[in-house]
Structures are given as C-alpha cells and as structure tokens.
Image (cartoon, rainbow, N blue to C red):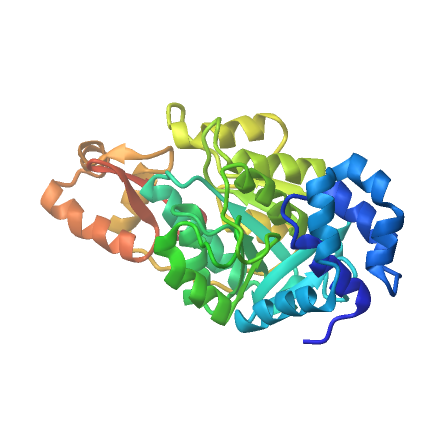
Length: 364
C-alpha cells in the first residue's frame, strides 16, 4: 500500500495514544509539509512542551524518523490493515463532515463499502428474543434493497444484524471500539474474521489499542456519522444505544425507532426517542418506503389458522393461554401453528410461554 506524505503524517501522529485529538491536528498543521519534521518540532519545542508536556514531546520527537514510520507501516501490512486518513480519497464524506471525524480509519475488508448507501442498525446487548428476530427481519429486508448496514460487534442486536446480513449476502460494516489486536468480546473473534472476509471492519484505534469503557460511546459517533439514517431496534433508558441516537440527531440523520409495550425495560429508550421526535417504525417497509426503495422480499402465505394467531397478537405479545382463548384452539393444536410462524419469521418467543409478532404487513 502506497501512502501520500499527508497520509503518512496522520498515521505517524495517530500512533501516539497519549496525544489528544486537538494536539494531533495542531501537530499535523505544523509538520505535514515539512521535509524535516524533527527540525520543526525543535523550533516549536517550548510551545509544544507547554501543550503536551516534556515527556510526551520527547517521545514524539524521538519517533520522528523513517525507522519508526517503517515499523508502523510494516505492522499494518502484517495484519492486512489499510489506513484511511482524512487526506485519503476513500475517506467517507459523510463522516468527514461530522464535528470530530477520526483522523485515521483502520480497515480490514472491502473499503468500497464506505461509498455505499449506508444505514445504521443498533440495539441493546440485552434484548428480548423478539427484538433479535425484529433486527434480523430489518437486516434481511434492508440488505435485499441494496443498503449497506453498519453496526457494532456486541452480543444482542449487533450480532443478529451481522449474521443475518452475511447469511443474506448483504453488505455489512462493523465498527469496533478498540484495535484489531483486541477484539471485544473475544468470543466474537470468528465473527470479526468473517466480516473482514465478506464485509468491512473499521476502527479509529491503532491495532494494539485495548478498548476502554469510554471508547464504546465515542465509537458510536462513527456509526451515526457514516449513516444516512439510524434504526434503533431496542434500548433501555440508560443504554449505550442512545448515544448513537443522540449523535444521529446532532448530525441531522434520519432516526427510526421500534416501539415497545409499557413495562419492557429494553424498549423504554426507544419509546422515549419516539416521544422526542424519532420516526416510529414497526416494519422495515417503513424505512424502505421512506427512502423510495422497493422491498423485493417474497410474500409469505399464511393459512387461515396461522392468520388467526397473528390477529390475536396484533395488539402485542401474549401468553399462550390467551392466544388459545382468542383462537379457540387447544394448546396441542396451537403449538404446531406457533412453530410454523416462528420458522416463517412472523413471531418469536418473548418470555416463558409468551409470544409476539416480529413483523407486520406480511401476514396476508
């Protein structure tokens, strides 16, 4: 991979984890066009020490040499990582126009996905089975309509979206919070490798970076920044998912939220966002129609008995005893219908013997 001088300067500066974002930008302005970075740093020694401290200044100055830059580039090449900087043609314009765009995006996979029509799908790690099925339904539908989906890599909604998109041969971008050497959670390393092979994984952190707790909400600004719109599948009132929604609002992105019944903690954040003006969506068709896309999903044919079950659940999830009463069926008659509807992706279990619809508008 051949980088321009400006790109090399950003890669070099970004390797100093102790430097604040503003200091890296300031230093870039000082040294980017220089043929002798060490000399420039020496001339600005007093000012820089006052800004970043003598210890960090000495670290930066002592690393202003070809050997250190070669070490960084070899490390990226060994890991098969591509660095996309603010001066790279591949840097996504939508992200560049946000208040604090990453100076470098470290990427593994198909970087061409950054130029696609991107939608974010986010949700809580601790989501109901019903929410995961809803996430899968949105991922499948939006992928089939040509959208590139972007999410994190956590348990719950992130993983559901990623797996369904990959299964549907869709386009997926995963934004991770730490460096590529420290995937979190570790159990998702195989998933990370599959995304890197079939989609794209990006991070704003150099490869060796260990993800700290505060990295995760900060990472969410990248998901929002890349996206034309963001769909919130689930989230409690204090969920990290709401950070992504807040960034989406700040950046002027379209925001869609799935509504929840009263008392469901993992959906309370969605309801709150809808109160604040987010668009309510209970079907992926809401999103595809908003963007003028045609959903090419096959129409699912239901039997009369299966339709009766969906009618029972149209107002919300219910216990199986209530569904039996509504449909005038005995449990042994109802269970095969529920199993069939689960297979068709129409409903999912939301609790002990409690079921709810995962989609509306297709139960014809």
